[in-house]
Amino acid sequence: MLLLSGCAPGVELAAPPPVLSTQWSVAPSDRLAGETRTLAEAFGSPELAALVQRALAANPDLGAATARIQQARAQLRSARAESLPTVSASLGTRATTTDDRGSSPFDFSVGSAGLDLSWEIDLFGRQAAGRRSARALVAASEFDRAAVALSIEAELARAFVQHAVLRHRIGLLERNIASARELERIIATRLRLGAATRVDTGIQAVEVRQLEVERTRLLEARDRTRNAIALLVGEEAPVFSAPETAFDSLAAPAIALVQPGELLVRRPDVRAAEARIAAASGDVARARAAFLPQLRLSASGLGQAAALGGPIGLTAAIGADLLAPIFNRGRLRGELDFSSGVQRESVELYRSALLQAFREAEDALAGAEQSRARVALLDQIVEEARVTARLARLQYVEGYADLQTVVTAEGSLVAVEDARAVALQERLDAAIDLYRAMGGPGIAAPLPPRTVAARN
Image 1 (tube, rainbow, N blue to C red):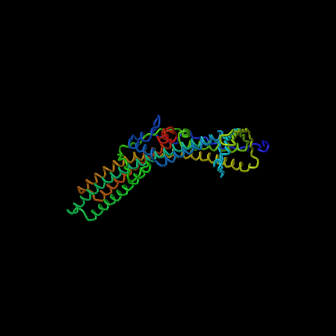
Image 2 (image 1 turned 45 degrees about the vertical axis):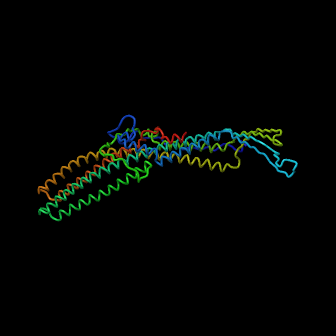
């Protein structure tokens, strides 16, 4: 059988690519030294911290990821049990009835009990390879859960910031609407005094209505953001209340950077892809070992009594079987080729995850730098627009400027204040993206209580 089974076919496994980048192309000026904090700590927001805790406890995507960990651990237990002996027991008896009045109506004539024991010795590491693959899949599922938690934290922070920005923009718009209505009242007064025309009042009325229309759009966007936060924290939108956080209380946090090579151990999605390479390599080793003979030891014992309560006769047998594949090498070759293809695919997926991580980090770094520059420029523009709008209104009231000048100045102020709020949101979003791209606070964070309970 050893001659017929021959040697297992050789397989060349694909190797993960090395990291060539040694530093980022953009070095932000606000690099923070030391250990990375969570987003809630970086923003200094207890409201965001409370939302993150609620999401970790009730988000359905995170719950599904936790369930997949449980499934992977069950598969690992099955792989470990494969190397243990198999024990089976049997017990039987036979009862007969008779019409003979002189004997018992029931006769328990035969009783037997048996015990079988079998154990496959892992000569060529097939079972060990299966255990390695199962352990790697457990690790991959745990890294997947960490990636989901990091994504939820980032998306929750983004929605939290957006909700605060929308509240701020609505406040700006309401202030501008009040100012536009006051100007509309002034124009109406001037119209009664003959110092303004009907065209002037119409122009200002249109301006006020346009601002009110924009307010309805922002209110709708705020409601949609609140509903998105409710989904992230795993609560029903109709009964969910988003925290009313002041936008001015949110400052752009400084995010600690790591070198490109460190993403291999910090990013949970990259670690999950790496673990799947190990799992696929174990499957290849398992499929290759299937070509080699298997040694199985067995023992059985049988006890039998002619009648219930009578003397028991015992028999026992011990044997060993050496099994080798002969006629199913085509099927085994197909399974080996399939496992090899999966291993090569896992390497390419790992490479894709690594390239995606580098891209996200570079995008976040560029976004952090450019958004900071935009905010600085818009701060100057907003200050100048405020002065211009105030002077234009005074000149119009005193009769030194026409209405078009006032409308233009007021419209410019509204536009640049709104643009500044959007730029501030982009700066905060860039910090969130950078936090996520750097792998967050690391992947060694404790699991929530329900995950620990599931593990126990």
